[in-house]
Amino acid sequence: MIFTDSGIVLFRQDFREADRIIALYTLQHGRINLRLPGVNRAKGKLKALSEPFTCAAYRIYARSGNVLGTVTGGKIAHVFPHIRQDLKRQTLAFHFCELMMRLTPPHQPSAEKYRLLLQALTELDLGQPNAAFAPAFTLRLMAAAGFGLDRPVLQITPQFWQRMHEDEFSALNFTDAEDLLSLSKCNEVCRRFLNGYLNYPLQTLKPFGLADEDLPAKPAARPEEPNAQAGEMAELVPARAQ
Image (cartoon, rainbow, N blue to C red; front, side, top):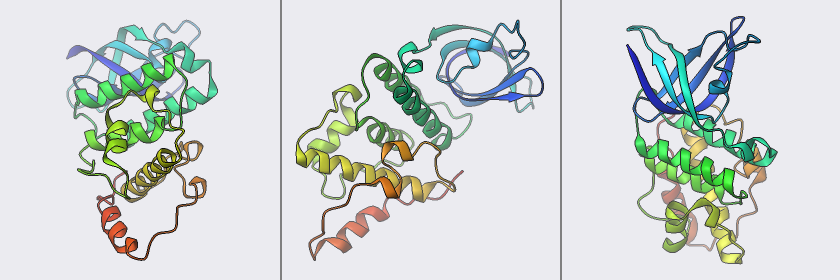
């Protein structure tokens, strides 16, 4: 079977002498693994289609029963050049792609997740990253994957919670002390969820303040708060996955 689908490269690795394998999140087929034969040769023609966070229309040959499909051609839509020229943007883009790899099951398409990743990469390419970019993306991906919370936790205000889920990523620039505290709490929500869901940590957690040692000190809780907060955070521990 030969088909064409739009996709974004999440991950790539060399395979055998001259091939590459990529994980591609596609609009119509979800996350799939594909082989690009011969791209590591000097005259390889499809190398650009195998680069991380490339967005393109891929022509794919898939044989029934095979684990890997084969990319036979494609047309690039976006390469996000400003991301590739800036280390901070590039690291954040890798973080988004790793989250998509770890929080999405294979062969289960979701237009919402595809659009979320494309929006994040587009805004990251056009504007400067801010401190809320990573937690906002994580919270929205949690919601799209069925792990979202139906209400704010840790005394985050509903207005701030809504902004983290709905505003453009580039508009999430916070300077007010209360907003910065709420942002720190959102980082805590993301950290608790990822620690509870994943069997091994993400490789891209530490640069964005989601690892335990990078979190800012939390304010002292009032005597009546601990039990209530423990109940709220218990919602963030789903069944573990890879």
